[in-house]
Image 1 (cartoon, rainbow, N blue to C red):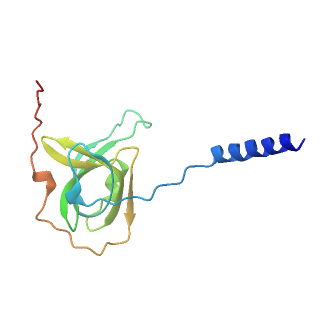
Image 2: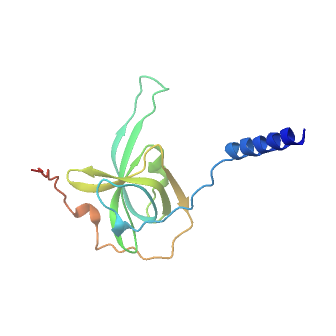
Image 3: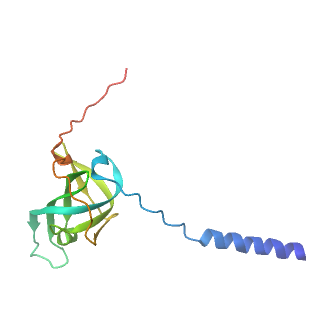
Length: 153
């Protein structure tokens, strides 16, 4: 009878373990100069230098279709700057001189240059002002990349 009791307790302990949520990973913060084309999953703390609205479409036909807004924001840290493409609600958070945390950001390529973006899987959070000075003479969005196909023989 004692043997059945021990097996029961071990299965209860196993089921409790399987229901436990996996621990959240600590974010690894990336610097702007470490960004490379085609990469994703970056977490950065950046200051917003400028914010320019490039597209604003309103749908007056129906209320449940929301308007589309896109802004290009120059953001940076102490290692360099890059253009960030803010969409819809993100546009309101990207005010010049504010400091934001970009979580799960990815690099999009636009006309051969890098753009930083946060899609629905990421997050843009306004945080307390950072202590660093932005290095404005290293703009990674001004570097033009070319896609080269390598043929293996």
